Length: 157
Image (cartoon, rainbow, N blue to C red; front, top):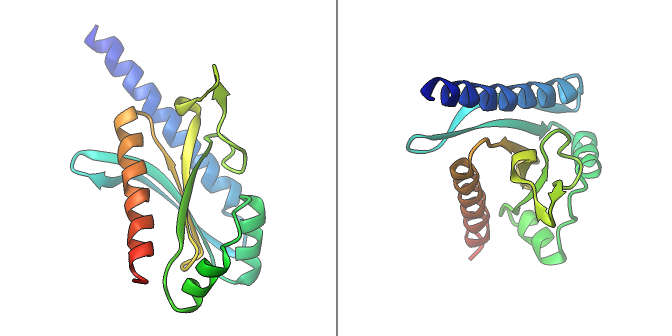
C-alpha cells in the first residue's frame, strides 16, 4: 500500500513538473518577456509549489501578456495608484495546461486538479503561474496571493 501511495505521489509530482516545463517552453522563445520556472517554491513551512514567472521587459511584452492572458484593465483608481507607485495585484484560476484559458469545470465546479492559479503584479508587470498538486498547496497559494493583493492595497493608504 505504501508503495502505491509513493508511486501516485511521484506521478502527481511528475505531472506538475511537466506542466511547468511545458509552460516555460511555451514562452521562453519570446524576446520581450523574461521567463523562469521554479520548482518547489517555498510558500509556507513545509509547503511548496511549482511556479512559472513571466516578466515583461518592455511595453510590447506587457501588452502581449495582457492580451494573451486576458488581463483585466486596471480601473481609474487602480491606474492612479500605479502612477503614484503603488502596486495593483490580482489573481485568478485558469486551465493548468493552458493558463490563457478559463479553469475547467467538472460537475458545475472548478476542477482543481486541472487548474492553476495565475497572479499578476501590474507594477512589476509580472505573472506568476502556480501549479499545485494538493488541496493544501492550493490553499496556501490562494492565501499567498490574497496577502499579496492586501499588501498592494494597503501600500497606498
